[in-house]
Amino acid sequence: MSKALPTAPAAVRVYGADGCCAALCLDLDASRGGPDAVAADAARLTGLLRGHGARFVTDASPSGGVHIYVPFTARVPYDVARELVEALATSHPTLDPGPHRSLKTGCIRVPGSTHKTGGHQRLTMPLAAAYDVLRRPNPADVLTALRTGLAAEISAWKAAQTAAWPQEPSGVPAGRGGQLSARLRSIAETGLYDTNRYASPSEARQGVIAGAVAAGWSLADVAARLHDGRWPGLAALYARYRPTQRPASLAKDWHNAQTFLATARQEPPTRTPGENHVRRSHTSPLKTHAGIPALLDPHAEHDHIRTWRTVLRATEQHRFPGRAGYLTRFVLRALGEAAHKSGTRYIAYGTRSLAIAVGADHSTVATVLRRLASEPGGWIDLIEPARGEHGDLYELTIPTDLVAMAADLRWDRGRAHALRPVFRTLGPVAALVFEAVENGRANTITSLVTATGIARSSVHDAVDTLSSHGLLERHDRTLVALPHHLLRAAEILGVLDDVVAQMRRYTAERRRWRAWLARHEQHTDSPADPAEDFWWPPEDDDPSGYTLLAFAS
Image (cartoon, rainbow, N blue to C red; front, top):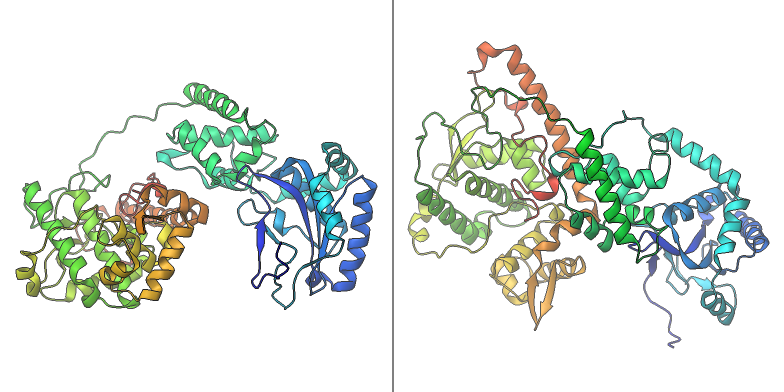
């Protein structure tokens, strides 16, 4: 054992991927009343714990705060630990329940860790005594005694939590088009639920499972999220079962949900298709548009798009340099992705579609498109401005000064992608580095610097970040991309919530625009107001599966 103290802060997560904790971590914070208030609360709290037969470890921080760790032989489910800590906090004002409130981010500084104010977190009991407590943790009857003794406080906290939940109409959980509702995702991620809606943890758990079935998910999709920690809240709702029993319990819940939905769901009324020119899905063929031939050679179109993409990738470092050029580069990538999915170089996606693809505001994307279209002999050409439910119609064009160069370039490997959701958080540099490795253009730090044109220090930081999130790994001193982990990383980082919020906002704007068109049908051939631009993707698209068209692929 080393006697050297750590030189950097260290904290550990309170909960595991199973949604349970090994100990109650009671954080008495000096910022809530000062060191004297902490000392008073610590004395009363340790007395209460001893009165219920609990053994514990204590440490103190240089700021006057105190940590009390109460370990247990059996792992404690999130809902049980949370309600105990919240109940204790009602009578101990300096107790911060924060570490036990989040299954994903709840953590606590451990003894020996460097403190931000200077000094170190230190044990306030002999090391041998602390070791003995951890070696012989508290049995289950101590946990039962604590819950019984705090029953009134727990009930009061639960009542306050129920009153705070927004009320929603009851009914069959809807997860249309592969997308769970925000309510069900919150239960799956946090384990918290509205007790007015669900009478017990098992009912809340069944609500999430039914929502996943209704969304068209598979049992394997849910099992994977329970296993890898993306849904610790749902895992905590299965904590009453032994680990070996949980797969069977999940399968049983899945079967029950399928049976329930098969009898409860009604077929939607048949809609009479009307004559219109709106693209109803990303992969539907482009309708005839003014000035564009109705029939195009698909092979020639894809050849043009791949050449356009390769020329863009080969020259973008110089044409759109530095951080200021990143957005333009990803907007152009989004256009290339849209063109491949549509099967034509002529694309009519609204700025809101592109905004979702690049993680930016639609007004910013519109500014980039106007600038690109205003450049003669540039990357895109505006064929026809937006009208009614049509977005602006653009043609992907190879800049006139690069046409000769295009003939000598070998097409890039891999699929076209805009900014996939996880890179909204990890950033464009990480996205470009990942893309270069994924497409086989580089597999070492040195080759990445050449391939991306990004400074070596930034490339090194991006590789470390990608590796820490399981998106890159090293094999025989070379980097390998793991694109199948993109969705998992995005979920763990909570990025999909931002995507969903943006999609919902644009859906509302889409409805308002359609309502305006319905009131002014005789004027639908007039140019559209750019401020009323309309969001093209279907309302029920699953944001976890797309960038513009394929977020996580």
